[in-house]
Length: 149
Image (cartoon, rainbow, N blue to C red; front, top):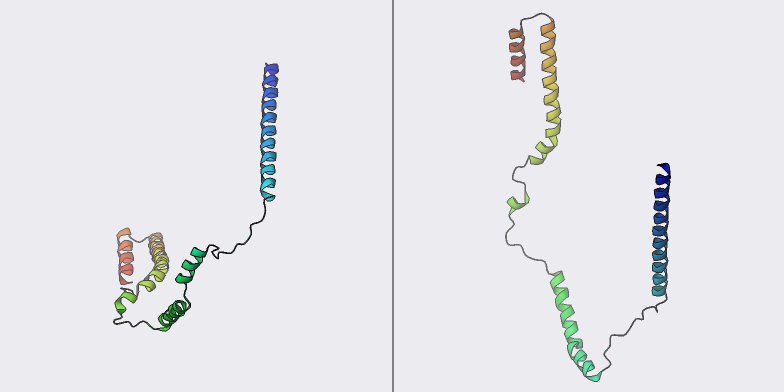
């Protein structure tokens, strides 16, 4: 039985070795492909001026010197002009409830305090019970104390 296990282990080792060799071949091939792309010529910056006479005429018609100056002047005037706001609705800017952010920040602290007060009330009731008071009177006294706060 151990000989069978050894035989399967050897077979698995051979398969693993073949897989590793195939992966290594693929890696080498991809490295060669990358080196081919590295040998490509660097791109040249080209002029975008038209070389055909008919295209030159169209390009010149599109960009006349006077038109460009007028266009730039219009854009400068538009940038410097201040927009006039007819009505400013303050209700859209202000929150609906002015103390909303305060309540949000205080809520965590209030939660802590309520837990602490409940714990303190429970401790007071336990102390009074230990002092051998009647259970009903201890609960009534505790509820009176919490209702006052």
